[in-house]
Image (cartoon, rainbow, N blue to C red; front, top):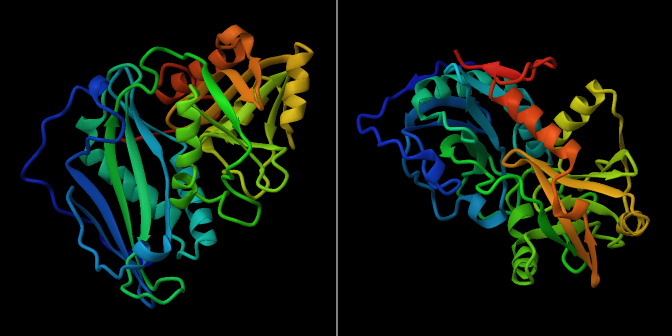
Amino acid sequence: MNTYQLEVVESTNKKDKPLHDQVPFGTIFTDHMFTLEYEEGKGWHEPKIVPYGPITLDPAAMIFHYGQTVFEGMKAYRTEDGRVLLFRPEKNFERLNLSSERLSIPPVDEKAMLEYLTELIKLEKNWVPATQGTSLYIRPFIISTEANLAVAPAKAYKLMIILSPVGSYFTGGLTPVIIHVEDQFTRAVKGGTGMAKTAGNYSSGYQAQANAKKAGNADVLWLDGIEKKYIEEVGSMNIFFKINGEIVTPALNGSILNGITRTSIIELLGSWGISVAQRKVSVNEIYEAYEAGQLEEVFGTGTAAVISPVGELNWQGKKMVVNNHQIGELSQKLYDTITGIQTGKVEDPLGWTVEVK
């Protein structure tokens, strides 16, 4: 990335701050946003912080036609003493570049991006809520903007970062959810875009999720796209199982997203002396463990929820009730520790947080 001076244009029409614990996720946005342009031959340029508002694109912009886009999700947290912390933001920009590589989008300078984000958060510090369980959601994304209907990587892109204050993900506490094991639709396949954080991965799952919800489930457990046998993700989260005392999670195989929370869970457990087996996990294995009384805990992991406990799995007419629909001891400890580190309530021995000063 070429080095350009960051331009800051402050908004003269500041918005009223909402009651953060009453805001539906992703519906309110702050006063400013960050933008960065790319042009072939010129590279990434024109870093700007400008008032939040609509953007103009040509109807032939390639994002509309071929879906060349990637995004990230991260958060800023307010501590009890008023500081603002980011949680492993360098990992998000590292993954943004991995996603971009898969979608043939030019890489960004990760260090520069963290500096730009820090300046944006500094300007919007008053938008970081202080109520327990709340945070400022951060959405960096890149879209292809070249006006061209040719089926080829674009020669122009726009990177943006928008911010949204969000309430607690769990309005009723950490209540375990009911999950349908999906054996018809496919989320991703090895060699596809499942390992990238790109738009189509999510919208392609809507129909399966809608069907699951109609049947009384909260979401779906995705199986591999070839054999419909091996577990991959739950909804848009990574998944973990505690089986007879062992912690198991599906190995990254090219179709599973390398979640920042997933990595943090594995590293945190390792610091506690608990190893995590990363391997193929079949739904048959999970059912056999359930039948043997050895399926002790199941939980999803992701930025929005951190930990989402699973209380029941429904698979081909079989119902697997996990821990009597109660959150497991390990799930609760992981949730308390990571959210505690994020909000400065718990010591950060692994150096995960970055303070925005």
